[in-house]
Every structure is written in C-alpha cells, then in structure tokens.
Amino acid sequence: MNYQFDFRPYRRKFVRGVATSHGVWEIREGIILRLTDETNKVGWGEIAPISWFGSETLAQAWDFCCHLPQEITEETIFSIPDQLPACQFGFESALFSPPTPHTPPTPLTHSALLPAGELALQAWENLWQQGYSTFKWKIGVYPTPVELKILDLLTQSLPASAKLRLDANGGLNQEQAKLWLESCDRCKANIEFLEQPLSVDEFPVMVELSQRYQTAIALDESVATLPQLKYCFQQGWRGIFVIKPGIVGSPSRLRQFCQQHEIDAVFSSVFETAIGRKAALQIAVELSRYNRAMGFGVDHYFVEEEGVERWGV
Ligand SMILES: O=C(O)CCC(=O)c1ccccc1C(=O)O
Ligand SMILES: [Mg+2]
Image (cartoon, rainbow, N blue to C red; front, side, top):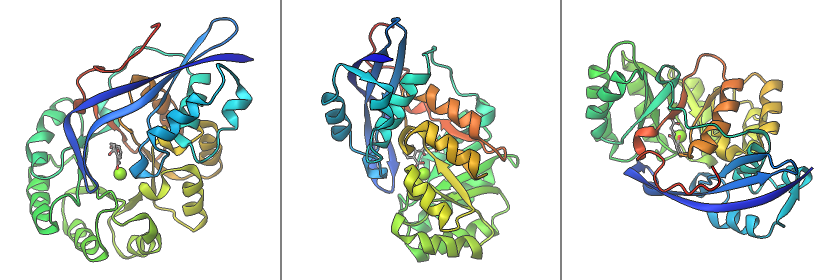
C-alpha cells in the first residue's frame, strides 16, 4: 500500500509554564502528519519530541519529514531509525489509528499534574473536585529544605485516600535523593513513588536506593526510549518504568517488549495534542497493569486545542 504523506507544524502555548528541574517550558511545538491511502482513507499522527528528555529534536524530526517523498510505504515507516523515536511513534500511529474527537481524561484512572513549589498547595483541590485522586508534583525545582516543608503541608492537606507521585526529573544529587526518600519513608501519606531522582548516568545508584528505601522509585528519563528501556530491564531493574509512548519509539515494538516481560509500567503524557494522545492512550490502556493511574491528567496546562493547526478535518 502507498500513502500520500503531508505534514504541518504546530505551536501551543502552555497556560502557565511547566517548571521542572530543567527550567520552565513555555511552548509545546510539534508536527501533525497525515497519511492518505489509495482508497482515500486518512490516518493522523503526531510527532511531539522532547529533546531535553532524550528524544530527537524538533528540527531533526522536521528535517526527516522534509526529506521523505510525497508517497511513502509501510516499509518507509518501519525502517525509521531508533534515533528518531518520536517520528517512529507519529508515523506508526497514523498508519493504525483513525482519528476521533478529543476525549477528556477520565480522572479516575489518571494522575493530575500539579505545579512545582507551593502552587501545588492550592492547585490540588480543584483537580480533586474533578475526580482525580492521584497527583504528581514536580520537585528539584526549589531548594530541598523548602520543598520538604511544602511536602509536609501538602501531605497534611491531601485527603487520606489520595496518592502522591514526586517527580525530580533527574535533578537531585545523591544526598538530596536520600533526604527525599527518608522523608517519604517517614511520611504517613500515600507516596506512590519518587520518579527519576538522579540523572540518567547514575542508574546504578538508583538501583541501590531502590533496595535501601521503602518508597518505590520509578525510572523515567532513564527509559525515555525503547533501547534504554531494554537496557535497564537487562541490567535488572524491576521497579517502576514510566513510559511516554509519544517519544519511546515504535508502538508495535513497545507492545512486543511489554508483552514479553511483565514490567510495572506507568504511562505518561508528553503534552501531545488530541491526535498523539489518542494513539498514546490506546497503547497505554492495552499495556497497563498493576492498577497504576496513567499520567495524562495535563489538560489544565492548555487552553483547549488552541494553536493546533489541522486541515481536512
Ligand atoms: O507523567 C505525568 O503524570 C505527566 C507528564 C509529565 O510529567 C511529563 C510531561 C512531559 C515531559 C516530562 C514529563 C515527566 O514525567 O517528567
Ligand atoms: Mg518524569
């Protein structure tokens, strides 16, 4: 089968910048692609890279699209190199998933993202009222003692049945990571896990920490792409794996790996539009186990689908 290939860039400004230990992220940019087959059936896909996280850059993805011919085949798609994981996801999902209108996340099965710092203290309540009971708070943004005090206040104010995830985005040093894990171990509230406390090159230390503390550790940046995920699994990681379908790579190869090894996976958004989200959720729902909430409760970071250029829909 031959497909006609078209693509367009998009830009969406966050309602408020997303603060992580890497700094503040203001604008989500990506590429929407369209494949039209010989019977005029249309498939949509999205390429939404996060280069600071370990995927290709938007420029590399754009360059790849620009160098493709107007007509491509399945073979073109399945031979996209591993260096372009967000492209693998975008093209493969366009091949397999027909578009449907945007469906808001079901709060019961999703985790809602809280803003960093003390803003979290006022942000959770509205999200709780929407039905969310799992929250993720970005840490490693302010000094550890400041954030630990906020953690105290946050865990005292959250309802007892709420679960809290902490995400350091690799921004802690070993000493800080230990302080966080000790605080979490002492905390009476339900801390589901500490996500990526240390940088990717400190994987062996995270293995040690995961054996030394009660609080679970989840790898995220360390398993950004499928080759990294396979590497950490081979090295013996049996803790939690955060998987971002939008940048991890080929959905079919991800499916193969997850079905072969029963890993404890938490699926997570890359702030994609409704197009990427639908494809990401499809694989997330299929591969989720252990009752882990999915990290797609991020709609409150955007004003609807504003700024997303679509055509022919
Ligand atoms: O996983 C979630 O709950 C929300 C999504 C999220 O935190 C995120 C979104 C884009 C880039 C990185 C991350 C992250 O988990 O570090
Ligand atoms: Mg993370």
